[in-house]
Length: 543
Image: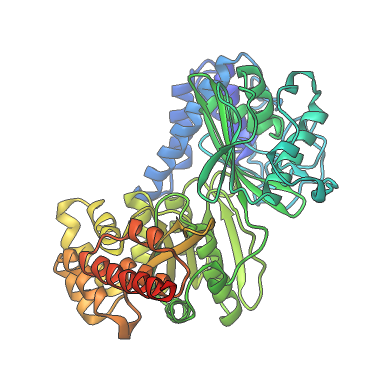
C-alpha cells in the first residue's frame, strides 16, 4: 500500500467518513495494489451510493480535497500517525459500528459522533484532542491554549520598551513561545490592532490605522519561520506546509488573536489580528444612539437578510459581534454562527449560541450554511459571503423563515447589492433580484477613518428596505438607491457623507478629516459653508 493511499485512509478515518476496516476492505476489493486515484474513485462510489445528486457533487469536491492532501503528504515519505494493515484476514469483514481501532495513533480516534474532548492522549501531542479541526485537507488540529503571563504594563510605555527580535536564533522553543506571547500582550496594551512578522522586513504593527515599525532588525528567513511557527500545533504546521496558507485563532488566557500565515518570496509572513477581549455595545463602537436603535429594530425580524459591509479593517467583526449580542439578550432563539476563524466568543444568554469555525468544525461556508438549515436555527450568522453558493444559500435561508446576518467587502449600499446580484448568471438575475427585494431587511456599510484628533472614528451609512427600495432592487435600478437613502431619514436611512457631516458638527471629526472622506458635492458644499462661518467667527473673536 503506497504512502499516499495510507494518508488518504488516515484522513477519511480521522474525519469519521470510514472505519479502518471498511477502508482496507475497499482496498482489498481492488486487488490490493490500487493507486490513489483508483482507490479514491472506489471510496467515492461507496460513500455516494445512497446520495442525491447535490450531495454527491459536494462529496466529490471533498474527496478531491482529501486526494490533494494525501498526494502532498505521501510525497514527504513520512507515514501517517495511524496503523493501517495492508489487508484484512477476512475478505468480507463485518461492518464496524463503533469507532475505528486506535493503535498508537497521533490524533484521537474518529468516532461516528464528535466528542468534545477525547480521553486517550495522542502520542505526538501531550494534550488530549479537543475536537476535530478540518480545513481543505480535513486535517485534525490539536488546539493549543497558552496561559497568560504576568507582565508589569507600567513599564511598557512604547515600542522601545519591547524586547528586540534580533536574538531569536539564540532562544529555545519555550523561550520563543514566551517572547511571542509577551509581544502580543504588550502590543494589545499599546493600542495596536495588528502585528506583522515577515521575512526580509522589520517587524511592524498597525495602530490607529497607521503602519509603525517596532524594531529596526530585519527578520531573516530562519527567524521568521521560527517566530511564526512556534505557537502552532504539529498538525497545524503540517497543514501549513502542505497548503502554503493558514488562518486560525490563537488563545492566550482570555485574549484571542486571529493568525494568518503565508509563504512569500523571502520566506514566511504572519499577521496577527488582536481581537477585542469583550463584546462592545453598538454605541461604544461609534454608532449614534439613533442609528443603534435602527439596527436593533432590524434584529427584531424573524426572517430576512441583514448585511454588514465595508473594506478590510472596517470593524465589521466587532459590529457583527455586537449585533449577535443584542439578539442574544433580547430574543429567545437558536443562533448559529459560521466564522473563519472564530474571533469573538459569544456566551449563550437568552439565546442558545452555536459557533462553528471553517476548517475546524465544517469544510466551507456554503457547506455549513446548507447544513444549518437542518439544525433548527432561528438566526444564522455568516462571517463572509464571498461565493455564489454561499450567497444563494443565504438568500434561500432568509426566504424560508430564518434571519440571516452576513458580511461583504463592499464600499457602499448600492455596490453591496450589485456585488450580491452580479455573482449569479444572467439567466438567474431577475429571479434573484426579486428574492433579494423581498428578503432584504437592511444594510449597514461602514469604515474606520482618522478623526483628525489622533484617533479613529467609525463612519457608516444605513439602508432600510422600504417599498421604494424593494422596487428599485427588483427593477435593477440600484444606481438610484443613493438618492433614495439621502431622503429617507424618517425610515432611518442616510448616506455616509450625511453622517460624516453630522459627526463634524458634533465635534467628532475635524474639518480636514471630514473633507477627506466626502464625495457628495452637495454635502461638501454644506461642510465648507459651515467651516467658513466657524472660521469667520474665530477671526471676529480675535479682533
